[in-house]
Image 1: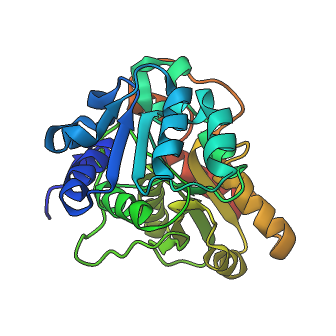
Image 2: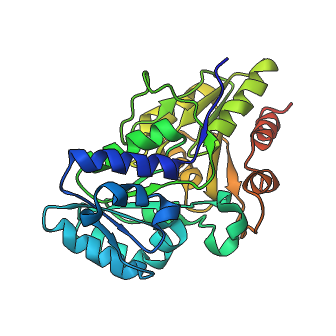
Image 3: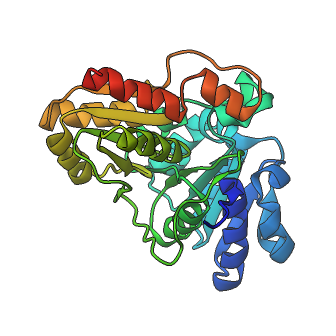
Length: 314
């Protein structure tokens, strides 16, 4: 068996920007004094004349990006999720989303897997904030292959995009030769009809592991990778709910306002079934090693497996 690589999606982002630099002279990149951490420094190395460090002034950076987009350029704007999504929210709303400008907000260090940086830097509310903006596309890739494809897809589409990236190196489970990414279309990772596990980001691999454990017990878990949280792949989710009758959602985000609530809203209106949400349970996290936090806050495969047993009654 080939060794599984672990790559942070922020690294995938930087590498893809670097590749796109040679292909698209209209691409520009902005950062808020965090280019090494967000990996936009990789773009800066090959296209310094198209890289703009706006300093620790995230709100201003969004306004600059908005202006650049009106000149035929395609701005990719980066900072940590806490600063890109939360601190600069009003500027994103009024200067980017409201006029539907072609700005790509690529926020690294999302969720609790930021680890030791602690609660002040662990943004677990970004999906909720960005989902609420009309016309905003919200994407959270699960591994290196998907992240690279998502960055390219974000560049190619017209309109505002929020793309969440991670600090933590996570397993690469997609095959680059066979994987196709399409915004708004989820992926059926495993087959099964006993229970559906709908996940996004690093939780997709945890769901895969849980499904393997459940399969060994004779339980068929259908895992869906919902990389695009908005627009949601309603058909894929409704099909899983009809076939399985029970649903678990999994996200490295608050259970309020994220993937879980998006799925619950859809199912409440079109296919009511029991749902359990695995995620941050309306609390702040804390400082610690990333994987320790993932286990402590119940975002691991063991919690998903346990939740499936509870829903199935055994």
